Image (cartoon, rainbow, N blue to C red; front, side, top):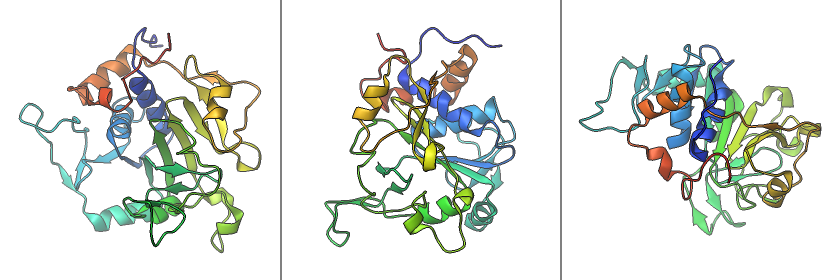
Length: 266
């Protein structure tokens, strides 16, 4: 068994936690949106689940993930074409797992990437629009990565714009059941969470070293279920850190979490 690394950053801890989301997926198309989820997906493909399929985030299906940097030092591989029609066939089949970064998540596991403000016609902040989130959330597994766990992300009421399906009985489409919804896990700078608590409540899966339950609750806009036994998020191994360096040779991961703190608090 690989030994845990003695020193690692919080970003690297979150990457390795996110990579574990794909361990039991088998042959599935993985999409990591954003630097940390992209590195995590690549790490999983090269280590824990070699059956993963991955695109270059554009249109090329790859047998080995491209490095995060794209320049003369790290040329981009282009292998099998996977255009939109094939992507949609894959999405609708359920053989996909996406990790995205919503701006808001509510107590139902619903997510928002569209706009902020109570008046959708005159939003305070206009963002991406719903994009493919409605279809993605209904058709396949979704996980989320949140760099800064706060009540601005984990909001008290519903999301300002509900872009994804969640565990809200009032919004459940006709013919659907909660068993068909797969909000897999959420990875934040405080810990790992899922929606498998009582009555689909968000619960703690693990806390990062030095993080307390009180800190999580103080930074979440709704009650979080606290199980009897709480694990500590597993430290990266030296092998994982070496692969991460290979995927992200220019250390772009260091810029994704404010001040690039260590994974173990002093």
